[in-house]
View 1 (cartoon, rainbow, N blue to C red):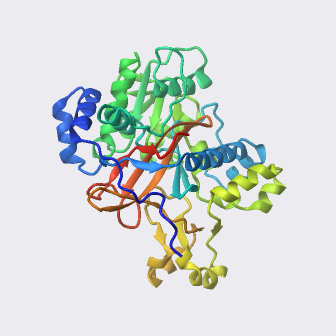
View 2 (tube, rainbow, N blue to C red; view 1 turned 30 degrees about the horizontal axis):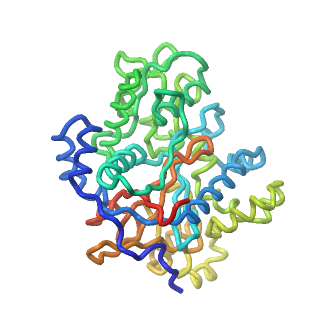
Length: 415
């Protein structure tokens, strides 16, 4: 059965000149802003995705339900039971930029996954600024946490991570860390964060983990001691031998790392979706009935892929989506109706979950181009900081669709 799309009326359009101006101001360079259009032609969509206040409320209710469950000792014990060793290390830091990704159908939002190294928050803030220039009357669906006077909301979040771990000591240097950072698709966002931190008096470097070393009980990059690592690696448990300095620093509290292995185990392991949609387990864990109801409404039922259930899962495959337990970025995910027997046999080897299919929202441009989209909520300490959409065509989000990419949400009615 085909679900009704969230919005099929033509979406508002952003003029490129407004985006160019916002990018040039943020990067401090018209030349770099222009080059970004050439190197990342499908990073930003010109569309704004209409969304209802009810859909925003649906996402908020699900997020609050998940956060309340994850905070319980019972959940943490269960989530860490089979987690990698690095996840057992305790830290006061919560983990910046949790990404709660939803599919919206009408006024209902269904949570399809949670990520702990969600990218795009700062890029989407630039995009929202462009929309406010080009469409001053547009009612964008986005929010940022309140902060002390004269502080930036995102900078305040990193300061909070530092203060949770180090108290009143000054935060002097942040390393933005990823493998071969210049080759990463979202490297432009690393540059934005570097500039943002520096504007607020925090030195910032962009580094490959191989550039980091341990000396005198601290983490260093060349001759610069690092206080906090903004971790963009997809080696979630830091088990790669190339990341040994970072792993040792994490396990010995030589540096504050955010997000970190513990946050990934508690939130982003796809196996967590099984417990979150298991009403019986939740009742046994002492979760309130209203919270269980919110989770049942907000998350598609998810189960482990077990060879013993292979025949039943194959028969139901057209209504399922298959995801690797520790996957990320739409890698090795499969819609059941697209499965071949060869791929199915690989899935049955283990390490996959099957999630009830939750169709993505759809929107349409003025040129009658149809796009699918998902909605990402950036969350810290249980607070939704901002929301954005990712438009695409095909099976999954890809940033390769002409006219697709990041897009803001605009309210169809005042909330």
